[in-house]
Image (cartoon, rainbow, N blue to C red; front, side):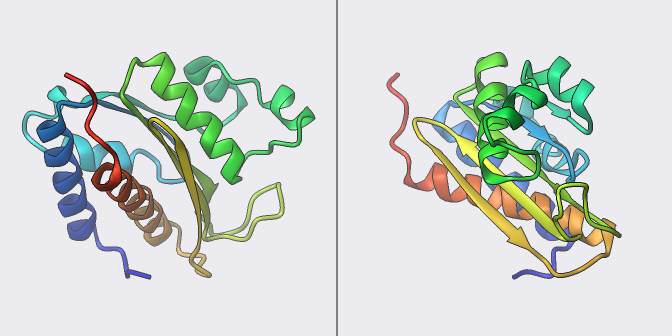
Length: 173
């Protein structure tokens, strides 16, 4: 696992942004525990408007419902809870669809210094990328350092996205 510096995050955002520009594709972001750092890394690139559809920090049930259209109570009745891979996948699909992106990127977790109400320890994050298919990944840092975890969560999400971009066929022009 990387130490997760802001320089590393910004470099990764620039790399992913260049890939998106080259592909002529656009991304929308929904993030919680990363606190906007995923969007910030993508937006730090000049010309980001060519590939960034929009993003939201979704930090409670109200913002999740209003910004993604998802109903957490209804999802929980199906066994999908916040701070899980299935929830991250739902977020990624919703933001991709609602913001008319080619890609949806989502992150949810517990930055710290304590865990969350779902039993996850600090340093727990799930991210997902929705494109032609949806992939998801969990990160456990084992650390309660909130700012450091926020950076690590953003790096993990953008790393997963970079992997998917590199592997995915280009959209039809």
